[in-house]
Image (tube, rainbow, N blue to C red):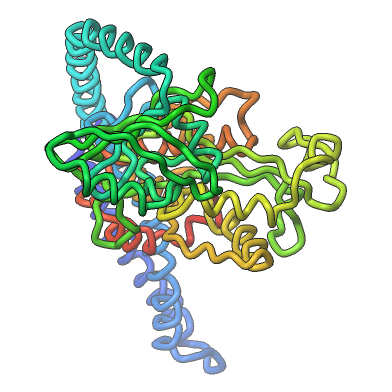
Length: 461
């Protein structure tokens, strides 16, 4: 059967439908004919009607199952594989699609996929070779800037942080969670800064003393640039701070924005997070660890991570410890989840929450946040839904399966840790982002609308 041409197989398939339908009706007529001589039997017409009413739908269901298994699902898998090759990572990933009944479609798709992979690999090698020298120079510059003995902050026209060095990170952490593209006035009182900007005039630079939100006083210089951006160079708290230099100069042209349905996915800040718990019931169990990373301008920000152990106030079951490796001794001196929630709220301000099987993690945040007087009303997107959008509802949507398809490696020692799973979730989102955009899903509203079509998928994730 698999050796026949595809068009002939389709023709024979419809011949089978016709023949099976005729067989069901003739079977009913035969049974009805046998009842003609039996006065106690039901009407032959009723027999034919009953057999046809049940037999034809059963036949249709059987044919649909065959069609769904051997046609619909393979086509869905082939389409996802092609999109992955065209717009996403391709490093082995998912195995070859089993489409034996689709004729030459699967081999043709595989050939196209291999060609795309070869072209992409050649282009990547050329680009890498040509940019190697630029990368070397950039690394030298970043190393030099990191050693400058001042806390340096580059601020955009809308007072959003677009660059900070190690010393500035230490200063910022003293006031609030460190956040690229966060508002500088989350860390420093705005009065002295705005007054200094007003007085700079054509000089471009002047001394400044500014008070932090904690009441600490920082002194240094402020420099205004022609495009309205400015730099703060303040005396450092810790000249040996090991935090990497974090920057994104594309943010100079963007204002910090709150999440909106109409905004592009690349314009939003996401916080990918995961929790480890004492069990699987959000109503009865408690969090023992929460981990999160920030995504700004469609990339993870190095050094901006939230990783906290939590004391659940109860013994951790051994079965749970066997999964995530966290025991009672590890959380004995950790704060409770209410205190951690307060810090996490600052870390995730003005961001979209990103999680794998988000309802589970959000249930703990809502419950404990309410006890601490916090409201986590952030927009939420789920990589389970994204997996269904990209790879089809029939695919497996666990985090492991998704990472396998996207060629994302989770180190075994990091799997089922809050930070390890949060990073994997962020990487999966970033890998699927170009594929979503290629399908016309470019805004938060479009993603959430498409996700609503796959709500039931969460039951199998």
